[in-house]
Image 1 (cartoon, rainbow, N blue to C red):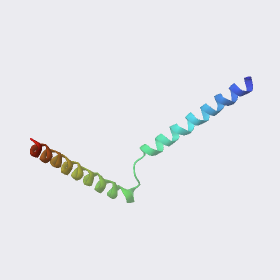
Image 2: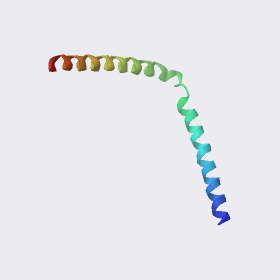
Image 3: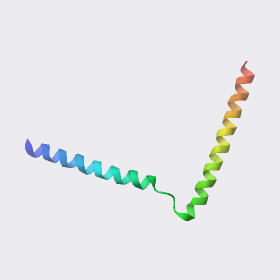
Image 4: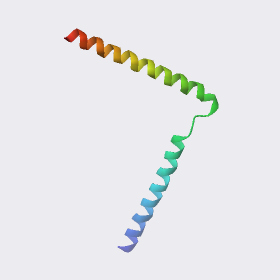
Length: 64
C-alpha cells in the first residue's frame, strides 16, 4: 500500500510540474513574424465586438 501512495504522489508532482511549464509557454509573446498578425487579429476582434454591440442595441430598440 505504501508503494501505491508513493507512486500516486510522484505522479501528482510530475503532472503539476508539467502544467506550470505549459502555462509559462502560453504566456510567452508571439515571435516577431507573427506579431503583426496578432495585432491585426486583436483589431478585428475589437471591430467584431463593436458590431455585435451595435446589433444588440438595434435589436433591443426594435423589440421595445
